[in-house]
Figure 1 (cartoon, rainbow, N blue to C red):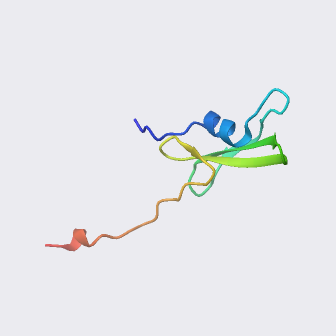
Figure 2: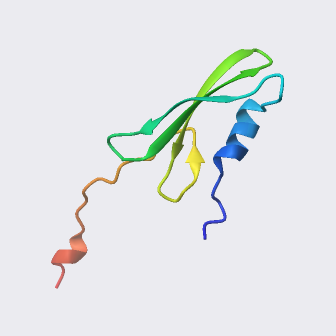
Figure 3: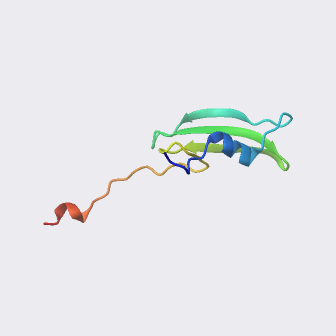
Length: 82
């Protein structure tokens, strides 16, 4: 199990600090076509005004504010060594 996994709830609490008077709400859920990963767009209010953040789910199950990088083809010299 990955001990560095960050839950979506903990990120929402960290970035938006929702309260009963200023809740955070989900405005969009979807998939990123290139990586087939999921994303969630949330809106909330902070002391300076409204804030919208998009969180992306990575392959290890963690959530981040940046999308995962799709795997790209690579070539290794080990395949051709004798």
